[in-house]
Image 1 (cartoon, rainbow, N blue to C red):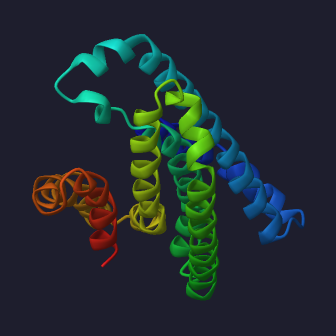
Image 2 (tube, rainbow, N blue to C red):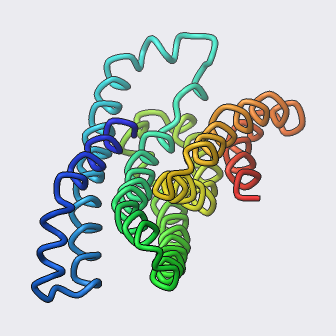
Amino acid sequence: ALNLSGITLSRMRRRMAELGVRRAFGATQGTILWQVLSENMVLTLLGGLLGLAMSYGAMLLLRDWLLATSLGKTGLSTGMFNGAVFIAAFLGFSVGSAPIVSFHYGADNRSELKSVFRKSAVIIGVTAVVMVTASELLSHPLSSAFVGYDPELLELTVHGFRLFALNYLFCGVNIYASAFFTALCNGLISALISFARTLLLRGGMVLLLPLLWGLDGIWWAVVAAEGLAVL
């Protein structure tokens, strides 16, 4: 994620002059916005797919060893592997829209800044619902591609995948919020959001919820951490 963010921001800084020329020659804000977002979405989705392929290869190579460890069969999570693509989509949109936010903020164009924020909120909300719905419907076939060789493991994986997928309702908001404050040159707030949702809340929930709900508590820990970070 950090590498993709760095590449995207570097590309956008180099292209600010080009986008300014396009704007001067009559390109609408919507046209430029669509160009920036589509290019960055393609980049991050390709990165997510590459990471997914590498994770799948590593899982196949290490499968026997992982199943032999004290983690047992529940030590594997295809939901986390498949989630890389969905997280990449949120990341691509958030980082891709950051230069637009920075531009309007620097120009003190508050009305356009609010418009971008409202549109982004709608896009992230709709995307989150679609992702959760797709995950719930496709959890079995996607899990079968990874662990279809073992019915018991498949059942555990599908159950964990469906619980883990609920975090997509919240993680897009947190990812966008972090990128939004970075675009506003408020690195402190951005860092606090990232630290809270990844290390502080997830770490705390992973320690607490399994004591209450057993194995399901591990999956709910991610959902709870993302939900609390939104608040």
